Amino acid sequence: MLFKQKNKEHMKLDIRNSQANINVNKGSDFEKQFKMIGLTYDDLKVINALQPFVVEEIDTIVTRFYANLEHEPSLLGIIRDKSSIEKLKKTLKTHIIEMFSGIVDDSYLEKRRKIARVHVRIGLQTKWYMCAFQDLLLSLMDVIEKNVMQTEECLRAIRAVSKILNLEQQLVIE
Ligand code: HEM
Image 1 (spheres, rainbow, N blue to C red):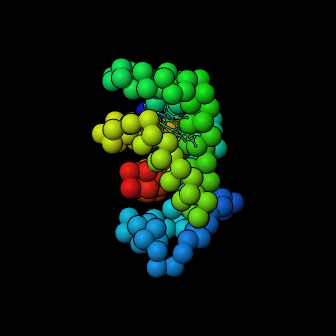
Image 2 (image 1 turned 90 degrees about the vertical axis):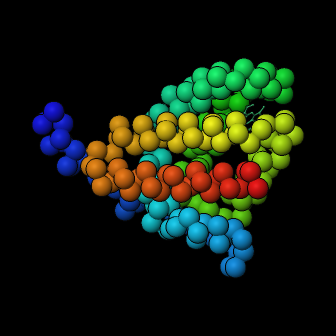
């Protein structure tokens, strides 16, 4: 226990080489939205610094995502009707990894609008969408807990990830 604690002091998130970019129209709702949730340039740097851990754990994250949908069998029915779990696992992997790019711009916004339209088309109810997002947040918190050892850094990472996931939800349920 002590040994683990001692090691924890040395593990900090390195944001020196991580990328971040916010490029949105001034005065747009989108700009107001991320300002209202306090998403900053530094948060995006933290998010991008987490990307390698997310890449490493992506299979676990996506497997858990689909296992969670088994609580509501109709969701798996929708997936089998409209697509396939194997295909969607690939799409979701790419999407989650891109979520950690540290870049928020018009293309980011447009992609989320398209994803929203896809889910409207398949008739996905908002409550199931929100459940999937919450489970994804918990899954990402596990990744942070496993890889970011220092308590303050861990909290910093969780704060940043909760913001980017919230922004994502705002855009897809709009
Ligand atoms: C498609 C992400 C929740 C079912 C997609 C796509 C992405 C995505 C990125 C590809 C969109 C495109 O073609 O450009 C997410 C995220 C979710 C979520 C981030 C929540 C955290 C769900 C849930 C279901 C679902 C709960 C359950 C039914 C589908 C289906 C498609 C799809 C069936 C393919 C539709 C088609 O190709 O016609 N999703 N999804 N998604 N998603 Fe989700």
